[in-house]
Every structure is written in C-alpha cells, then in structure tokens.
Amino acid sequence: MKIMPNRMDRGFFKYQEEFEQKALEVLRSGWYVLGKEVSSFEQEFADYTGAKYCVGLASGLDALWIAFRLLGIGRGDEVIVQGNTYIASVMGITINGATPVFVEPDSYFGIDVDQIEAKITEKTKAILVVHLYGVASQMDKIVSLCNKYQLKLVEDCAQSHGACFDGKMTGTFGDVGCFSFYPSKNLGAFGDAGAVVVNDEQLANEFKIIRNYGSEKRYYNKVVGANSRLDELQAGLLRVRLKYLKELTEERIAIADKYTREINNPQIQLPGVPDKSTCVWHQYVIRCEERERLIDYLNEKEIGTIIHYPIPPHLSEAYGYLGHQKGFLPITEHYAQTVLSIPMYNGMTKEEQDYVINALNDFA
Image (cartoon, rainbow, N blue to C red; front, side, top):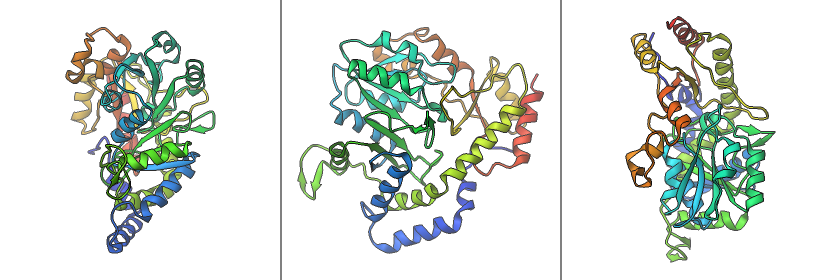
C-alpha cells in the first residue's frame, strides 16, 4: 500500500460537482478580479472567524508583510517570533526591514510564552504568534504582554483555520490575523491565496488599498502598493470549501485521535494539545531521535513523510546576516532534527490509517 504524506485530490472529488459548478459560474460571469465572489468570501470568512472584517489577498506571505507594513513596523524595529516556524513568518518581518527576535518553542511547538518578556526591549514593536501545525497558542499570556508593553500583535494562522484558544478563534486576538489558503491548508484553494482578518475598519480599508496598487479608485494611487488580489475563481472555490470546513476539521480530528490512541512505540513521541487550546491538525507531527532511520523504514513501506522544517530560519542562508550560529536556539534546533509529519489528509481511509499505525508500532 502506497500512502502519500498529503493528498488534495480526495478533497476535490468529495465535493467535485459543487467545485466544478462554481468554477463554471465564475468563468461564465466575465468578471475575474475583485468581484462578488471575493466580497462574498470576505464576509463569510469574517463571520466564520468572528472578526468584523476580512480582506482577501494573493498569499499568506503577502498577508504577513503587508500587515507589518500597515502597522508601521520597519527598519530599526524588532518583532518577537518563535524560532521553529516556516521561513515565511520571518520574511513577513524582514521584508519591511525589521529584525526578528527569536524565542524558543514550548513542548506543543508553539512559542514559549514564559520566555517572551525577557526578549522585550525598547526596540520591540510587535509579537508574531505562529499557531504551528494547527495548535492554538497560549493567547491569554501573549495578549497580556502586548497590553503591558503596548505592542502590536500579529497572528500567523496559515495552519490554524478554525483552531481556538479558550473558545475564541485564532486570528481574532490581535491587530491582524494572517491566513494562507495554499492548496495543502485545511481551508485550501486551488492555487495561491490568502487573507487577513481585522476588527478595525480603517485598517481593513488600508489593506484593500495596498493590495490594489495602492489605489482606492482606479488610476488614483494614494500609496505605493502591491498587486495582491485574491482572484474571483479562488474566492468562489474557497466559498465552497468553507461551507464544509467544520466537517473537514472533524474528520482530521478523528484521524489524529486514532493516531494518538493507537500509536504505541517508546521511540516515537506523539504531539499534544495544551489546556484551553484546540488543534485542527494541519499536520500530525511526531518526534523521533532516530528520525532518518525511521524515514528510511517508512519509505520501504511506501509511507510518505515530510519534515516541517529541517532548517530553522535563524540558520538558513537567507538570514546569515543576522549572525546566529548553531546552538543559538538549542530546542528549536533539536526539533528540526527530530520532527516528522506523518500522513494526514481529508479522505484518508481507515485501512490507510491502520497501515501507518501498524508500521510505526513495528519500528524497532
């Protein structure tokens, strides 16, 4: 049995008729940029998250860098972020000239909230929280710190569509919630797509202006903006998937629960979820001290896996100019050497799940 680490085709086939109907509807409309599909999705996604406003953008990275740009964060400013994130999180900071200040993760892969305060300086202007792998971070302490030091709060929700902390959805705690709808995400489009959610009407309008070349009215440019528009086709297809996001999330939770109940191998450390948090299981990430041997073993059984992420941003070539050396973030670096994402996708059969579980339990 061959099992891929992720499959997006099954998510399409499950709702194939609706996806194809919506695609034809958009194609036949003759309106392909910033039309009714985008505005409808923005309203529906805002309602889903509990935010007042949503603005569709071209990608999750655009959501991040534009967020920091509009919050006035740039050269000379520092932004606190966890070390064990995807590099796009950090790029959102550095594209604007600001400096990332890295904090170690906790045992749930989120930022260690008890280490944040020691990193705050007079240059600190914001905290970027990454709800990694679909686990909601411990937002009460983070919000308290932002209030205490008057810091901006940006949430990277690229992997946490629908995850909550203490009953409140990720993306709605801070100034801006940034979302990616890359096809592999829990709420995935059929190409690149992203959005922000905010509660400030003026800020929402500024996002709309900057995404469209800095123009509020065509050919009248208020600022130097970007071309970062969520297109009509992706918005329409996202509207279809959003209708089923609750059941899709429940399916992933059921797969994760089965993994957690039935994987039983002392060499494999299973993920957990902290108190008051929920997880939507964008990835099911195990840890193994003999990861490379485990990967080879699973490859022999045709079970695909992915490492999220093998090189922490602070050790990447792209951020060599920051001067961080190996050993700077030992927990982050150890995670990078031991984490492994096992197959997790909607439409995964019981037989596929059992095959993965039995293989992991038989790893010696």
